[in-house]
Image (cartoon, rainbow, N blue to C red; front, side, top):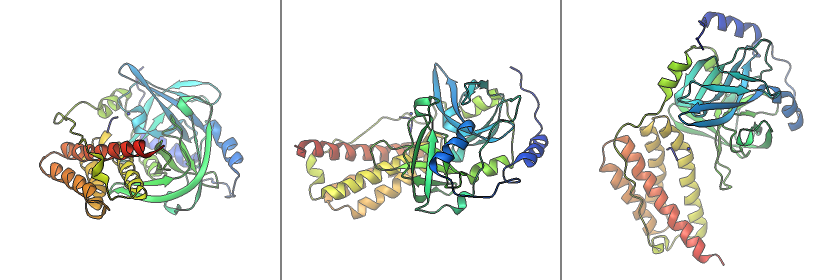
Length: 352
């Protein structure tokens, strides 16, 4: 949920031929494990800053080249609704995006094209289907959109199925603000994910989109003009008007729940929001609701204390009383926010 010139003709066939001639999958060097420093040094020239003008503001994020012809992968939410997008390289060169050559709203991905006078350094896409929990990873991005790269390492925490159309990689490698759209590397320096979302409260809920979705997009490029892209991805206010109804609970509602259990509930709520909110922002309100519903239904049955069970049950009752997925998603988001508020309030009154 939101809480955050002329176009030249471009032949899909011509692009496919170009990709076949220079694709890393055709001429991939022998794989060898690299140090974090080696991954950073060899990949930095291919990682870019992205600025997208939307309305009266500028959205800033990260992207990375996936082909020497100047094709850049990033998150769709970084550039959605914009027909004025600029890409800045490591050496300071800036290019206006000439066209968009791929859009996947279900996976929050887009491919941008810039016109280069010389081949651009690009990254190799790994096979994200081979990734498993416990695998080491390295994340690189532009903190606050500056070309001063942050580097973090960690592990794949889990492979999460967010919906029938979306699988996500959860990683303990921190993803800095402004780094949405940045690459997530395996130990061989191959990109196995695209940074998507961060959780800032220290719970290691950092999410990335598997790289195989990008590989699929590269095999079926569809060039569109900047005007068409902006019009098709602009989020206009639609649907029912939402009036927030966040419950205000007495602290006694969580009596009987241990601190550890309340922390577990808070983590589960935060994780559901991190998974569901990007889907909601893409117009996937039913998918968002389904993610929220799973968490609510679990603790409606299994919370230690009756007050919390009743609070989650009331949220489900409210969702059942409305018809649109939009209203249903907000009903459960209000349920989450009400419980988070009372958990924080009790902690503030019990901490010396």
